[in-house]
Amino acid sequence: MTDDIISAGWRRRVFGWLIHAFTATGAFVGLLSLLAIYHQAYVSAFWLMGMTILIDAVDGYFARLVKIKIAVPQIDGELLDNIVDYFNYALVPAFFLLVTPLVPEYWRLVCVMAITFSSAYQFTQVDAKTSDHFFKGFPSYWNIVVFYLFFWQMNAWVNLIILSVLAILSFVPIKYVYPSRLDYLSHNNILRLSMWLATVLWGAATLGLICVYPESNKALVFISMGYAIFYLAISFYRTWKPLT
Image 1: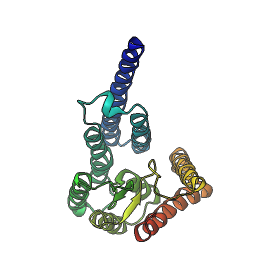
Image 2: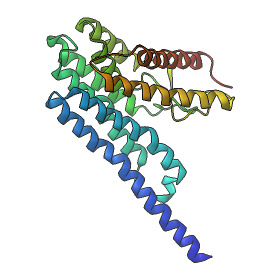
Image 3: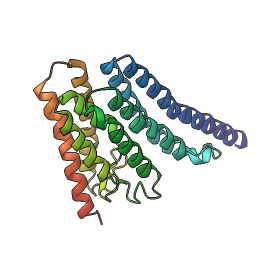
Image 4: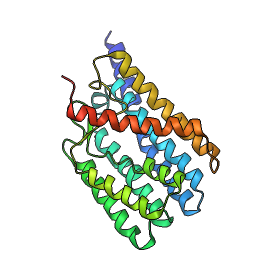
């Protein structure tokens, strides 16, 4: 019996280290995104950004599965996750904006500064994730925002306004849905499952848009943008009417 307990402990420890390593690979993939942007391989850069989002989406589930704070107590998994996420969700898309004409040339540094500063605030708040598992303030989804701006090809001044508003919203205590932690979204299991499935469908549709770029597809646009609007709507609703 004692040997079984020791063996189980070692397995948990090994899996814990592997999960931390998996999280850390997100930074390496993010670095490859920067390389792709530098070489103006923008579609490849978005594929790599998508990979970092996938890593971020599933590593927390694995960590909770093995009770990683018990398995590897000497590593602060939340700190590691925040470091990797700040790099991938803020710095990589900021670099994208810095070297592309998505915003007016003489406003790029100001725009990038707003993104990096607001994201630094968002990531370091003590209650950046609320007790009921929501993000407080715009959750620095800058890589996703940059993709949409790139895909829409709108006027650079319009892009600047959108980015500025989102940077300001980082400081506004609106609760945003945490797609992988839906415990307090609803008491109804079917609704929580539906939200999770909708998120997966959004991911597939958005990747589909990358596949067909520079062409478009109305169905994929409808799914991708429809989810984005629904995500904001349910986030605002839960801010004003929290689950009791």
